[in-house]
Amino acid sequence: MSSNLENRPDDAGDYVVELQSVSRHYGDTIAVANVSLGMTRGELVCLLGPSGCGKTTTLRMVAGFVEPTSGTVRINNMDMTHLPPYRRDTGMVFQSYALFPHMTVAENIAFGLENLKWNRADRDKRVSEMLTLVELPHLAERLPAQLSGGQQQRIALARALAMRPAVLLLDEPFSNLDAQLRVRMREELREVIRGVDVTTLFVTHDQEEALTMSDRIVVMNAGRIEQIGSPGDIYESPESTFVAKFIGWCAVVEGTVDSTGNFMSKSGINLSGSWQPGSASAIVRPEQVRISSEGAFGTPAQARVVESHYYGGATRVILEVNGEHLMMHERFPFGRHPKPGEALSITLNTSEIRVVPTPGTPR
Image 1 (cartoon, helix red, strand yellow):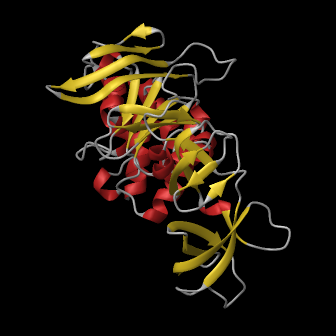
Image 2 (cartoon, rainbow, N blue to C red):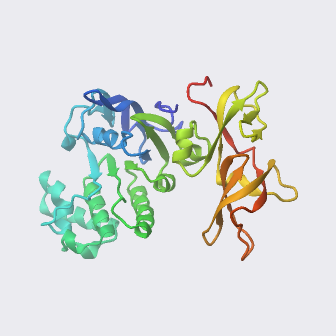
Image 3 (cartoon, rainbow, N blue to C red):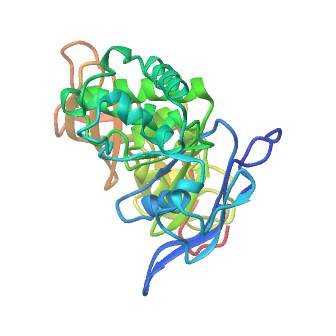
């Protein structure tokens, strides 16, 4: 498991955020178990996992809303474990945005600055800078109820960034937006965060958000870290079937790696390689399955179409191969889409297929 603090650039400086063996228990329930993570300046890290995996609790321990049962939370090399949120140099954008409904946009952004006793001129200047940053200077006098969901999100972000925090914390920032707006807003949010070079930790259960926004992804399961890595590492080199199934679609083919390092499945899907002997699973992604053609490389197989769904640019096909269900994304000739029951010759690109040990099997 990649849950240590060493997954960082070699030339990186001190951590801005560091969690050292952090746990949180609620009676006999373990919400977070022994999580360690280091984040460098300007890095955007995503906590990804299913509901109840501990990602929001981890975020709230960084924010100071939840105190760890054990372990240490450090920000800019200072122990923040037992300090309240207002002393942590963090800015947070909540899932509901939490804008004050009776205050104008400008007043919402200025709220934290006013509490810090900034003078009026400096406060107004910072509010203007933040509104320009999120490209909404014309909305300064509006109330939150007069804004769209996307506008409210940007104002909540401007309010969090107005304090120039060391760490920006985002809790499911796109969950209240429709699908089309969500795509646009994550692109805009990423651009704004990059512009201010703020270290950012965000929580999501949406794999697409994690893949498109993150420098690194922390996949969590049952309170523990399953794997830490770049989006490419997590998708292409998952360390467990849990990670593989949570990031993108895949088929998990169970089998055994023999003494020569080759994978042999119970259903007859066999792969040549040099894997560690023992019980294992092959992770087959849709892009690793192709229609057979002259000169194709990989392992040939005969398949039967189970389902076929046309998506315009490509067709998603569920295939049955020796009792296993695989998926393929393929662009077929115009007007020629495979039908259920049809036989197809396919090729598995064995050089890209990942084989992982069954949990409990020595690596």
